[in-house]
Length: 383
Image (cartoon, rainbow, N blue to C red; front, side, top):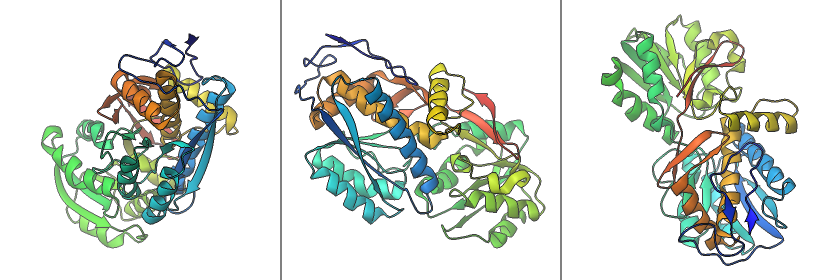
C-alpha cells in the first residue's frame, strides 16, 4: 500500500491507492507501470493562437516536472512528446493520428481551439485513447467517454458578465465578435443574447468579423449607430486590443465586457484605452484558493517571476488529471488511465483552477470577474 502524494499546487481528493489492485470501487488495473509513461501534446506553439498554446504548454511542463520531482508515480517518470499544430485543424488531426498509432503513447493532452478539437476528438475516441482538451468550448468536442475537457465552457460562468452589465446600469448592448471562432460565435449569438432579459439589457446590434480583420471601423460604426450603453468585444487574442483602441478612438466611453482571450497580456498594447474591459474567467492569479496560490508560486519560480494566465492553469490541471488517473487505477495503460479519469470526474478535485467538478467529462468551476485597469488585470469578485 502506498500513500498518495499531494503535489505542490494541487490537492487531490484521494487518500490511498492499493498497489495494482485499483484506486477505487469498480476500477480495474493492468498493473502496468513502465519506467517511462509517454504523454503526447498537440497545441499551438506558433500562429495566431500561440498565446494560448504556449501558455498551456508551460502549465503542462510545470505539472510534469512536479510529478517527476515528487515521484508521484513511484519509479515511473512522465515523458512528454510535444507537437505544434500551428493553428491548423488538418495538422492537428495528423499529429493526433500519430499519437493514436504509437503504442507508447498513454494519453493525449489536446488542442486549445474548437476547430482543431472538433477535428481530432473523433480520432482519439475511435482509437480509445484518453484525450484531455483545454479551451475548445464548442459543441462537438466531447464526443465520447474517452474525450475530456479541463476548461469549463465560458457559457457556464459567463453570467457574471451579465451581473456586471446590470450593476453598471447597461440597458442596450452592442456585440463585436470574431465569427470564425466557434466559441466566440456561440457566446455572441446565443449566450449573451440569451441572458438579456434576466439582466435587463437589449442587444441593439451584433457584427461579426474574421480572424484577419484589423480595421474595425465599419463594424464599430454600425454598432455605434444604435447608441448602446455597453459593448461586448469578443475577439481572438490581440484583436481585442486593436478593437478596443479603435472603439475608444471612435468616441465610445461606455461599459465594456469581453472574454478570457483578453487576458494573457493581450490588452497590453491597448494600455489605458483598454481600461475598464471586464470579463469572467475560470482562473486568475489573484484567486484566493490556497491551491491556486500554490500553483502561482510554483509557476513564478519556474518562469522567472511571470504570473500565470488561465491557459497555463488549464494545461497544468489537465496534466495532473492524467497523473491522478494513473494513481487511482494503479496502472498506466490507456485503459487504466480511462478508468482512473472516470473516477476522477465523478469525485472532482482541487487544482490550479480551484475547486473543480464535472458534468459528465466536462469541467465546471465557479469562476471570477476581472478587469483591465490600463496596466494590469485586477480582481473584481470571486464566486
